[in-house]
Structures are given as structure tokens and as C-alpha cells.
Length: 260
Image 1 (tube, rainbow, N blue to C red):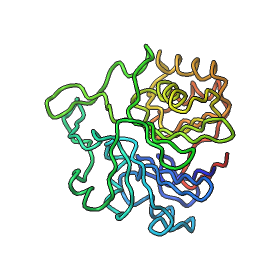
Image 2 (cartoon, helix red, strand yellow; image 1 turned 180 degrees about the vertical axis):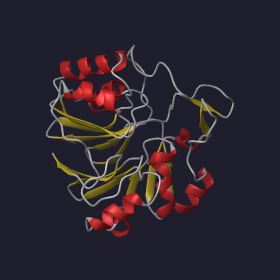
Image 3 (cartoon, rainbow, N blue to C red; image 1 turned 45 degrees about the vertical axis):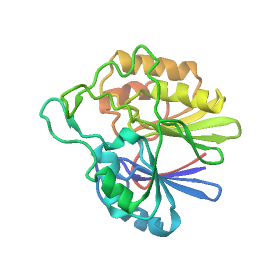
């Protein structure tokens, strides 16, 4: 399996960066675009790498309905798009009521894409799963939220999901933001696949500070004996420092290619 970072918060070499996430996942003959960032940065970086997303990718997976993961969808069309049905809900920041949902409506997306929505796990291709809605099981994750819906009720981002790839009876888990909690995401991936050994976890962990959730997450990952940890995107500096004390990993930058 190969993962190419097309969009992330940190720029690599001559590549562009933005607050967002977009990864190209390649396994055997399949190429999947996971999220699209919030602009055309993912396309420009792909072009610089010699990748033609228009021709080479037939399937897009949207991790959840936030602007920084899905507004890049405006730049493509005529592909399968897999996501949770609640990805299209209207959502806002609680502190200033600014809109943070998708720029395209569900109707507009249906016009551009072959839209597949599911709350349940979905087999994208052999050994590649979209996890669907992730149960909130741990006592330290997804207990508070800074977001609200249009009824001014707390939005815990129930559409948050991830991809899991099965390789040699081990799991490679790719998260967008892990609003449901990266540990909950891992537990669900293990349940869906029936495989407990996790080879790697990469993506946004949505950890901001070195608080209880960050400490418990590190403890969980160490207990799982996961050797390859790649926190990115919405994992902020204080949390990254805490992770770096326990794990060895490169800083994720645009243009980076990881091989598993």
C-alpha cells in the first residue's frame, strides 16, 4: 500500500499546503482519494507529482462533512463518492456561529457524483473498508464539542468515519479528523474486520493539548503495541510534542509518500 499526502497543514518542499486533508491511497490496482481539502491544492500537488486524479481515480471517500475535508469536491465530478448520510448537515462553530459545513449541498453532490451514503461499514474494494458510523465507547473521547447544528444543539460530528486497509492480516487505519476519537476508530476497525493487530494509524487525531484525552490516547496506542503512528492535520503542537516523546514519526507534509 502507498499513501501520498496531497493536502495537509504543513507544506513539503515545493508543494502547497492549507488547513485540510487529502490523501491518495493506492493498493494493488485500486486508487482511492480520501478527502479533498478545502480548495484545489490537492489537484495542484497531484499534478506536481505527475498524478492525474481525473483519469486515475474512480472512487472518493469523504471522512465527514467539514469544509476543510470536502470543499475540494467542487473541483472534480463523475466519480463514486462514499460518505455518511449526515455529512451534508448544516453545522457551525459554537463560539461565533460561523459555518463549517460543506460548500456543496447534497443535491449538488448528487448531480456531480455517484453518491453512496451509509451509516454501516462498507467494503469499497477487497480488503478496503469505509468504517461508517463509529461508536463512541471510550470514556475519554468525544465528550465535548465546539460545534453546533442549525438547531443550536451540540454537534458531535456523528458522520465522522475512516478507512481501514487489511494487509497481511494487519490493519492500516486512515482517519480524517477522528472526531469520534482515534481510539474508538481503532476499536471499530478491529470489530469490523475481525483483526486485532494494527500496523499503522495515520491522519488527523483532533487532539489540541497535552490533556487527559491525549495522555489516555497515547496509553491506548502503546497498549495496542502500534509501531507506526502518524498524527497529522488537526493534531496540534502541544499534542504532537506529547506524542513525539513516546513515538518516533516524521512530520506529515504535503508531497510525502508513505509505503507500507
